[in-house]
Length: 276
Image 1: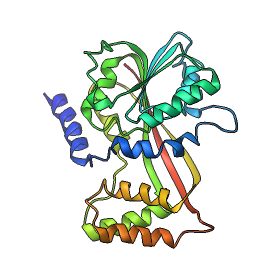
Image 2 (image 1 turned 180 degrees about the horizontal axis):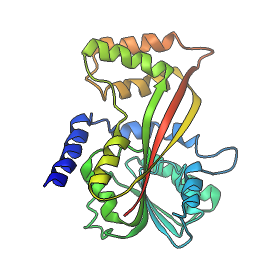
Image 3 (image 1 turned 120 degrees about the horizontal axis):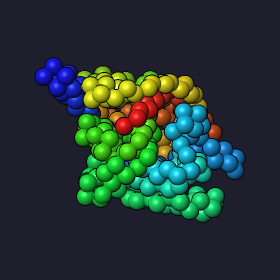
């Protein structure tokens, strides 16, 4: 009984801290171009995550992979180079259109893009039980509670991969968030997914391995692009008033240089891999 209680504790804790931060399809559709710019480095595709999985002997040419929240294919395309097939899911049709375009550019044909929201997927109805050698979920809000995690376990017959931010610092975004939090007295977004998932998996009898990647980068945006991003992100914390939206615009206008806004980001990305 104690193990059951411990498992439920972590499930409830994750649920209680879930801020329903999944953005709607329209939000991700609007960011397809932004994320697509990160797929290619020059004219090449590549992913340190894929190299990590190869170093752990978790990938081979006969594997079938389920990629949850694939986006325009930053990891999907490099994965496709080393496995037999990939079922690639995303809530955003625009993201999937970019993925299909990138498949044509790279002559990759072993990816099946499907427009689906993972929380709505019935794994058993689709006959995906114990189907995939690897279930892969990189930096996606699609896995946000125990039910969406459990479906990963059901669909996998060998391995799972999940990553999320452990720490994130956005120079501009943090200033805007600080204003919203103080005005509305709401909690900040938490970056505890890896913490909850590790403990849930441990209680279920798995032995997940944890790794951390540190990264930093700069993004340039137009004023309108930046406003849409920060407005929609803050709307995940609370209902925004016209005054809030005006304040966001005011902060952003102070950061415009030559018609562009630069956001500097530093993150620690937590990575979990485990055998089912």
